[in-house]
Structures are given as structure tokens and as C-alpha cells.
Amino acid sequence: MSNNDYQNEKNEHVPGGIENKDTHPDDEASTIEENRSEQDSTNEQQTTYIASSEKKSKRPKTSKGWVRGFFSGALGGIVSAILVIMLLGNQLLSASGDTINPTGEQSAASEQSSDSVIPTLASDDADVSADVSEVSKAVVGVINMQQQNLWEGSQEAGTGSGIIYKKEDGKAYVITNNHVVEGAEQVQVALDEEHQVDATVLGTDALTDLAVLEIDGEYVDTVANLGSSEDAQVGETVLAIGNPLGMDFNNSVTKGIISGLNRSVEVDTNGDGAADWVTEVLQTDAAINPGNSGGALVNSNGDVIGINSMKIAQSQVEGIGFAIPIDEALPIIEKLETDGEVSRPLIGISTAPLSQVPAEYQQEIQLPEDVEGGMVVANVQPNSPADNANLQQFDVITKINGNPVKSIIDLRKELYAQGQAGEHVEIEFIRDGEVHSITLKMDELQTNES
Image 1: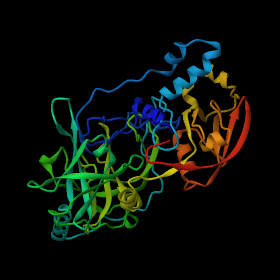
Image 2 (image 1 turned 90 degrees about the horizontal axis):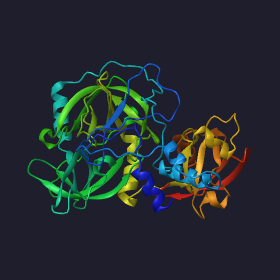
Image 3 (image 1 turned 90 degrees about the vertical axis):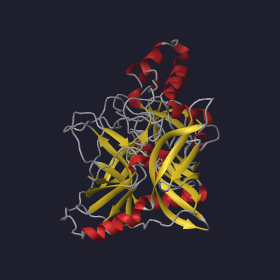
């Protein structure tokens, strides 16, 4: 994906989507809009997923609608050019980090496998208190510093939490959420009331909402014990540790249970208000408030089994928070620590869902009437796998490896399921009203490319 395409994607804002809850000035509470056309029939209220970090409010940006863009252009020979501009303007994306979603749809965490409920595990309060006291020392505050204007230095723009998971060779390593440190010019880590140190951001990954920091280990005495989320059970007692509402309430502990395993939550990874990925999370009723993002979800043994990340913010809903399972996070953490990024497969296209193309303009791409969904190719990167396979602008991708593709989430899932660069995928698409199929070899996609 070109730098311009990527920047366009980062600047798009569409109503709805998941928002990050940390105190970051660039993040606003955004609703998660489902990329599917069906709404949750049991919930007609708008569901908002908030990242658990505290942020300063910022006036939301607005984006021009499709219809206005189309009707402002000329007709006839320039229709194709207008289509491209509009698609790109709506944050067309490539296969790895930002995209689009129809507005007006609601999104809720979809429950997948529902494990049998077990009684809340009994545990001696004194033992739990001792375990919490120890692991709390490894939960730190993460402060996002940004320059607010030309006349002042960097100031605190947001706060979140982090977990010290390793100490080695005089350095300590902290895992937190990507949205906690996103946009920071400087990051600091508050170890306690007396020690606040500068941190180096080793790597971030927007898709999984994880980031790894490095700090001087001089004042670090405790490292968290990372457990296994695979062993977690519904009904098991858990504790959420973090810094709700900033550092004034540092190392706050709330108690609850694991309410669900393998929950699927659609998330907005680039802040454009559109869901573009699905995250598998643990559900808990332990209170997770703004500022908790990046903090620890701990079992009764004091082992970290999750990284607190988001919650549902809705007046009718209480006690629904989510944490990234530690087993899912560890491979990403290792990549970020060693490589600074997570590479994923790339085919080299920018796309938008067919649902965003007005009906009258769908005739311009000669779409058969029986086609109900797909991803319109808005741009093909020169010399990319898609370009080499002769995929063209305004082709409508309907299947990858035989599986239907109706959203950016579908597209990414199918591409990333192939694993890595060098693997082959079969793409079925419609061009000039006819169905075509090509096989292409994927290239390597860097962390925030498409």
C-alpha cells in the first residue's frame, strides 16, 4: 500500500466502531458497527466498545458522504475517476489495518463456543490478597505525552496501564495496548508514586491492539507471572488491576468472574469509526474503567491470564468487559519485542464494500443482479501480487479460496488464514459482468500497510 493510501485510511472517520478507552487525545469513544447487514435482534440500543484508557476529548472529524462525492463530479467519461476518488476517500483499505463499514448497523460481541459454567472457585481471602499484592507491583501506569502547541513542551495527553512481564540485562519490558501509546511523542512509565521513567516503544500492532515498551530496570523489583488463558473457566474468580481514571487511582483492584470464553468482538483498528477486524477475547464482569487498558486480568493464583482492553459502554449494560487472552498475546509480544512489528500477507489492493457503492453506480461496473456482496477494488499497487495477477480497478472480489467475501473482515481473515508471504490464494471476482478467477502469490505486509 502506498504511503498516501495508508494516510488516507488513517484519516477516515465513519460513525460507529470500537473505540479505545485509554486517555489518548486522538481517540474518541466510537461505536463498533458490524460489517454484517444483520442487526442483533435482541438489542436495539447502540452498543459502544470503549478502550479502557483515559483520553482527552477531541472534536470529531467528519468525512464527506459517497453520494455528495459522486454528484459533485462530472458525468460520462469521468465517472470512473469519481468512483476511485470516492472509494479512496472512504478509507479503502488493503489487507491489513484500516477500512470501512456501513453506518447505522449495530455491533455486539458475538458469543461463540459457550463453555459449561462452573461454580466460582473458592479461595482463601488472605491468600488472594497476598497474590494480588505481589502482582500489583508489576502493574504500572503508562503515560502518553504529546506536544499540544508550538509554545509548550510535551504534556500528558492520556494514561493507561501496563504489565512488567520481563526483566533482563538491566532492562525491563512492559506490555500495554496499542491505543494507549498511539500518537505519543514520548511515553513514560509510572512505577510507583516516587518513580516515573522514560520508555522506548519497541513495537506496536494495531490489529491486535498490543504494544511493547522498554524501560530502565533499576527500580523494577517485581515481574508478573504469566499464566495460561487456555486453562481459564467460566465462573472462575478473576481480578482486574490497573489505573482507572488516571494515576490518582493507581493499582486499583476489582473482583469478578470470567463470564465467557472465546468471545468475538469486531473492532476499529484505525479510529475511522468502522470495524475492520475481529478480536477473540475473554469476557469478565470485573469492573474495567477508562485508564485500565493494558492492565492485568489475574486469576486467584496471581497469574496474568489476560490484558484488559475494552468494555461495552451502554446505559442498559453493566459488567461486560473484555481482555486479550495471554496465550493469544504472547506470540505478538515476542514479535514486537524482537522485530518491532508483525508482518502479514499482502496482495496490494485498496478496497471498499459493495454496499457503499450507490445502486446507480453499480451499473457502471456491470454487476449482475444476483450478486449480493463483495469488495470493490479501488486501487491496485504497481508491481504488487494483485497487479502481477492482472487484478484491476473496479473488479469486485466475491470469494477467496472459495469462501464468500462481503467485508474487509472477511477479506483479511481469508488472506491471513494462509499464514505468510509466499503462500498462494485463489480469488474469484466479477469484471464486466462476468465471473473470473485468478491465483496469486502473496507478498509480505508490514504492520500497518495494506
